[in-house]
Each structure stands twice: as structure tokens, then as C-alpha cells.
Length: 121
Image (cartoon, rainbow, N blue to C red; front, side):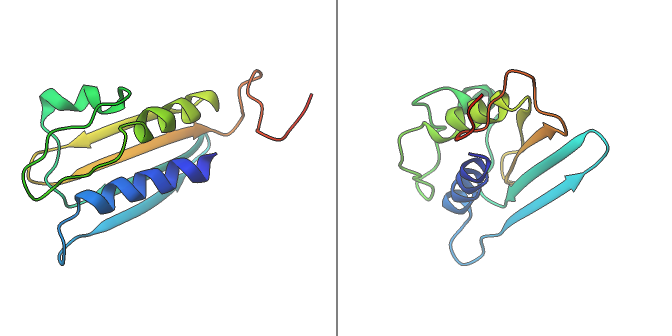
């Protein structure tokens, strides 16, 4: 499931990165509390008034004519739900014209009620 989250973030970043000059960077950090993953792009960025809605189901931010992402608007909400299930959190940092950074962090220890798919109690 966590692979699905990373692939979704990479796919979204690639959709918004400009053709020919697009850049997508994946970074991973580990510390005593857990791990964090960030995906950065150099796309158009997301206006502050639209940032809160990107995690809502069936919602996509309005882009200009060069950025038409398509899709269902479910990738980020599902990703956030998966991360939350494992006791983590997901975030967005963006400045219009400078791209966006989507990230998530996970604790070292799973919450007691989290079950990894395929495992049975």
C-alpha cells in the first residue's frame, strides 16, 4: 500500500511538471521517530486557497491551459487514508510558480490497530 502512495505522488508530480524542463525529485529521510518521504516538482504550484481541497475526494485544483491532469481526483484522498491507517500524516507545501512538495511521514512503530494487508490476526 505504501508503494501505491509513493507511485501516486510521483505520477501527480510528473503530470504537473512542464514538458521538456520538468523535474521531479523524490527524497527519503529517516530519524529516530520514523521515516518521511517527499516528492517535489517544478510545476505551476498550487494557490493557497486551493491547497486544502486537494485531499478531498473527486476534487482537483484548477490549472492553466498547460496543465490538464485528468484522473478521478481520488489518488490523494486514498493516499492520505493509507498513510493515516499506518499512523502517519500527509502534507503539501506549495508556492504558485515554484512547484509543489507533497510528503508523508510514518512512525517507526505501527499503531496497535493497524493491520498490514495480507496479515491475519
